[in-house]
Length: 245
Image (cartoon, rainbow, N blue to C red; front, side, top):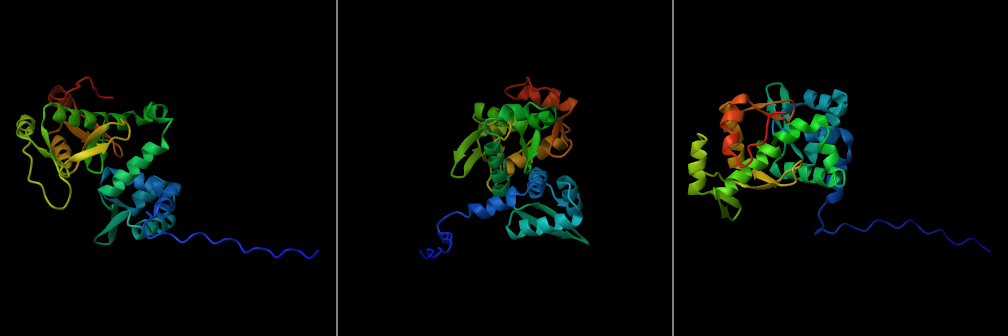
């Protein structure tokens, strides 16, 4: 009996123009070196290629190739300063997507992952693309809500009169919203799995706390309460049981 003719392998279906390009996004994040670089940039700060190479434990040449791919995919942005180039996440959408993926990745192992001593400082307080996250960020947002300090707006929140009065007690006067970005909105916290505050208002509050000496930058994304912050900031928050690690 003559052999049956072999069938040509089926070609993959053509992508629909209405489908999100999830495979392209997944390919960028799936590489361990690129995922480490992206996690390093979640603080919202700029970093040099050398810093990112060290964060990913790869050679400068390998890092350069990864950075080129992430630039092409619009995951990161680059700024030239003299002879040097510095990189940051492209925008808040990328930062929120990465944190959401981290939440999905730790399903079933969340508590175990965050009980490790090396993550304790990150869980207490950290920088999430320019705003305060972790337990302290969640408590700050909860304090604003409990005092009716935020009023609903089409894109999230505005500051209410009660909120302005409470923020004045912290020595802070909210600036006017800009058109460049959303003013104030919820952001699901990676470690606490509850919302903290994101947006222009949240960025300015973190900067204010740093300038007042209530918080200081730690290692990487970590943010630390200072002794002054324990005395001046924590008593004004809803849950003042948070202590320095």
